[in-house]
Length: 146
Ligand SMILES: [Cu+2]
Image (cartoon, rainbow, N blue to C red; front, side, top):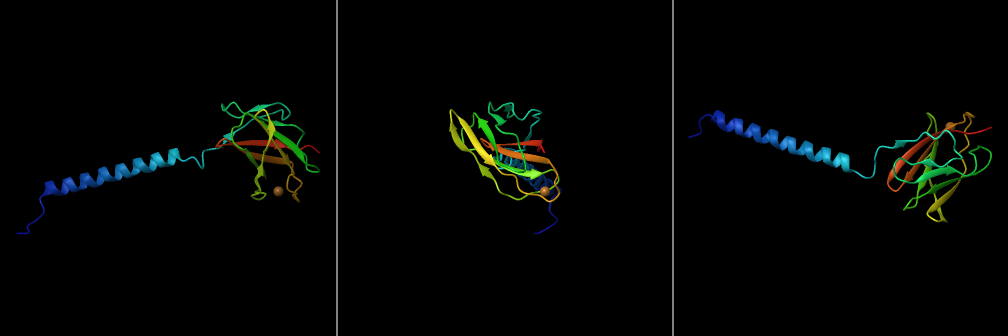
């Protein structure tokens, strides 16, 4: 009684497999685009670090209270954040470790962090700050004065 499988049945099975694959792809795509842990970073352009720099369209701003330098700590302020912001610093083209700074409340929705940049033998002054504010990452290239 086990003759060749009818062509129609094979087609149906193939169709079912394709539909299943599409559903899987859809779920994977949805998951990929709705992850909250690794959202694409927003690149900031802030020519004047002493001026409040808008963090995308979040309403929050970032300001270097004192200019960034290698020899001494400097202070960065974030205003308008709901949750504790964090910051990390790397050199352009060179990872400088995984240490991250946690900002501390400074009143009126402002947060401050006292930053000491890692020492690097290359003496390069080009850095990239990574600031995570309310679930979004903002990356800011800046140059350290001499
Ligand atoms: Cu370095």
